Image 1 (spheres, one colour):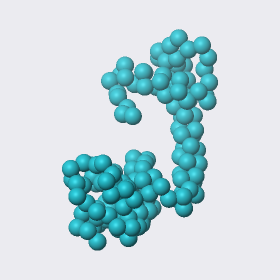
Image 2 (cartoon, one colour; image 1 turned 90 degrees about the horizontal axis):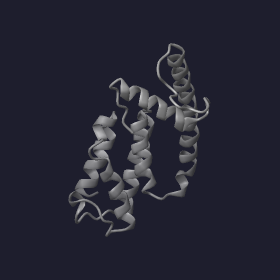
Image 3 (cartoon, rainbow, N blue to C red; image 1 turned 120 degrees about the vertical axis):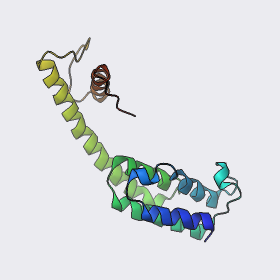
Image 4 (tube, rainbow, N blue to C red; image 1 turned 180 degrees about the vertical axis):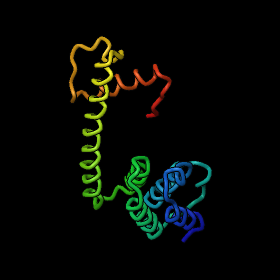
Length: 159
């Protein structure tokens, strides 16, 4: 195994949190792409790197192991993003399961956001300003209202 691929696999296996991977996890995806497309454009750190199919599999397996270690959304998003670079149809069930699980969480979280907005409105806080209707299933409006309210209180939510 090449030196860089070995280091990336070792670092993936050692990582426990998003903070551990946030600055370099993109390399795993670009290395995976290089196995199928040797001239895949990337950053200077990967110039001249050649990746074999065996190394590609090692990277994929390291990412799959990592995915099981942490349920933090930023971690999961990073791992799924790297796995998408494999273009492997055998991961379809994994993607469907992730989609179903996180859509469920999103819907449940929206309920909390909506209930919080209503509670703030009920104590005369300025939420739903200019809204024509209030609806628990209007994700975009609820997120927008929550972001605007929090911003007015000096709280900025990234993303």
